[in-house]
Length: 561
Image 1 (cartoon, helix red, strand yellow):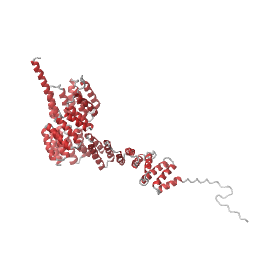
Image 2 (cartoon, one colour):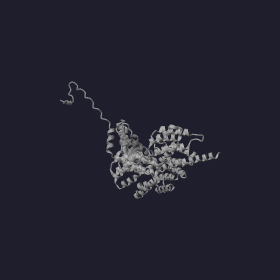
Image 3 (cartoon, helix red, strand yellow):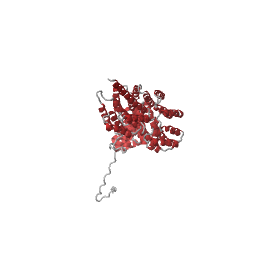
């Protein structure tokens, strides 16, 4: 090879290396939530080379991070219009479609991307990673599909930290915090700040605050400009410790490393809110939203607005609008536990039927049984305080289902809450589940019978009869202790057989069983007498009087004279 050719070869290699590093610089900005810097980096790369596939993909991801789906679509469509054989960008377009709720079309794009990228060495791990990332980050994504593709990608590229980060995120979505931490640890060698931060988020759901702060501090040590770690410190001190001075210090540290943005004024608005200067907080929030665009403001802005209208203005209708915007324009990873409490509090006034689902959604962000149980117990307490019996029952049922060691006896309070809320069919199902686990207890049969009695209000179907028969059986084991239940069961059974079946003999049999519990029960005794007494014979029809006789008069005896 000639010297000039050698020089040219090394020049090209150095240029490609610098290029890749520049793309990575943009990715680092994106992970550090400096989306403006990320966007600027990728746009500069594309200005020099519009066909840089990797830069196109990550520019689209930056727009998606900002909830700018239309802009992401335009970026991907522009490249695909001239180069349809760009599997990474095809996968990116699948991400856009998934974000738009077009799940079937998205899956077609993902499978097409895999087919296009498949070579002699198999599938492209970068494409598999992009598909996994999309399905993890979008709520409508298929987490099982993401796990499958990301696990495959780790086998093909075991040293790619980004793949391990996305795999950890997938495990978090699935609720497997332990597996998530293992994946993040695998990413720690190449992406230490991101990996440590992600581990902190897992421990955050476990309320293990010492470990959380330790990992956040280690993330900052690994990258002093890693903005998300400062923001989580701020959030923890503000909402959990309620140490407002410390929160303010972390806010200032965050501003120092974040992109300059009007969004950072949210810290001023939050301070105004804490000082109960609600009008000032609302003015700051409106200014941020107007400057940023309704769908591009940071989650903290919507949170502040919702709290300001809820606490300061007692305006739950407007607070609801901002709570909805908070959830619509944030990922689960950007929320705090109290966001769900905030939304539930607002909806308890605006639309109570949605509160149960709000709390159930909160479970997705928690990876521990204890944390999930705490969320549901908080929800149950809300339902009890607000006399929402059906909601209480549904939440108790959810608490039962998440506990692998749940006691079936818990079906009784679930059924009772359904019964008190007028949901008799669900109450019966819960009571019967209780009875299957506790066949010698009177309570499941008793309340199941009562629920069925209200469903079958005329008694003609006899829905409650099997349960009353079981109640009578169990009550008979202790006629003193279960006296009232035995009497109730006997009376209801007797009533059914006499009035619905016309079986007086069977009715008397059950009334006599009732007297075994309450020998002095006058109502039962009277009913037995009435049912066993033969009906009086019908009076004979009177015959016409014979001629010459006096009808109805006595014949005088003859005198002996």
